[in-house]
Amino acid sequence: MSYELPAVTPRPQVAPQTAYLVASGDLRESANQAGWPTQAAMEADLTAAFAELGWTVVRANDVDPATGHGFISSQRMGLEVFRSVPPEAPLIVAEAVWQYSHHVLAGLRTHQGPILTVANFVGDWPGLVGLLGLNAGLTKMDKPYSTIWSVDFTDQWFRDGLRQWLDTGRIEHDASHVTDAPDLPAGPQVDLGRALADQLLRDKAIIGVFDEGCMGMYNAIIDDELLGPIGIYKERLSQSALWAEMQQVPDGEADAVQAWLEGAGMTFRLGQDEATELTAAQLRWQHKMYVAALRIADDFGLDAVGIQYQQGLKDLSPASDLAEGLLNNVVRPPVTSRDGARVLWDGKALPHFNEADEGVAVDALVTNRLWTAMGLDPATTLHDVRWGEEYDGRFVWVFEISGSVPPSHLEGGYAGAQGWRQNPVYFPLGGSTVKGVSRAGEIVWSRVYIAGGRLHVDLGRATAVTLPPEETERRWQATNPEWPIMHAVLHGVSRDQFMARHKANHLNVAYAPDAATADDALVAKAAFFAGLGVQVHVCGEVAALARPAGG
Image (cartoon, rainbow, N blue to C red):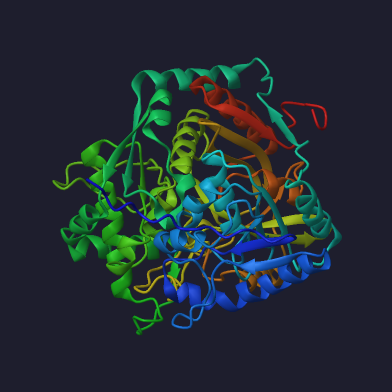
């Protein structure tokens, strides 16, 4: 008997001095179409830079005349496009916008040639955010890559890095700001961190995940085999259950949440057009989500909860961001159990890990327990590492999350919080953000990620600073004015050191009342993570550790 064997798809041969280019895009065609002019301009700049070095750039797929863009917009499309890429070719992944990494990860995993990820370093389109998410995914799957970024692709630093990659297949970045497995000073901070780690390992905790894999963030999914050994287990929940629970929340309960927020001083920019403006109806649904999330968390005894929202809920409900910010705040509208007998998490924050990012889940859980034990406000949130520029002699980062922070992080608290409608391009059913300016103060920043098959955490110190109102507004207009903003100065970490090192599009932040307390909290947090068996890295300068520069 003979069988018909499958035909082997021939792979093209790479020509000398030729690199191939792919661009991962969004699942939302409205986002792909809006971002394509920026992507096309970036690719033209890249092609010109390669040409100056004697290299040709070949796009792996043409612009689709039906959609009007050249992004890889699905995992299936990614498989098809990579069939046209020579396996040994130098490969560029160019990102000028937010991108869904899983569209290209299959092709990148098996690619045999050198890989270069490149982003534009600008505020109006989040290419560098997409780059950091993609880099974290490549790190998680142990795929070697090089990375670089530029404002306009003409600076000498970028050109030198590009030449190094073409000559050697690698770009070396400065990592002298990182201390691996730091020596922690003996004292009550280390004792507290270790005791909390022992408690978590002994008693365990549950994080509730309303669907995994938000927006293609492969890096944001942590396998059970890595979570279990640190005492954390998942309750896998469906967003359909959240939507169903929202239907059971009476209008009166939702309206009471709105009344509480207005009484606390929060204001809302309301209109009548559901397609483009924030409406009372959208707010009511958001408040029902807030109530429903607390009740489901109570049902399952959760220690933290994460709502994916994108993709599924965006077609059913206004945005989840308002609920997420409230959950992370200690002072917030009260919600009772279904029988009215108990106020759920009364006087406590229920850690919410935005966009169902499980690296943030681990971090937020640890932070909540440690900050509470130290008598500090445990409100924590993630931010996108969005952009930044020099101001008054310092590099000041713009950290922005897509709509949600705990109000205690803002200047004026609830009185400094404004509700603006989410952008219709990404949020067709709208919903309120928690817009405001993060208050000046000392913060600890962190990121939990996977590398080499194990959990790692990067920890660092920063200061949230106040900028003049006109500069804040300029930065808002250069990014997303409807979202909350933090102006942050990292301690002892340059822009390019941070970009080269950071293994996520997200960064977690928590405040401390002063610099000394923030240093103590970082030391205790390092001890907590080390006690769990997580590999600890300290990035930049921390006075409490007093390490020599570059040590």
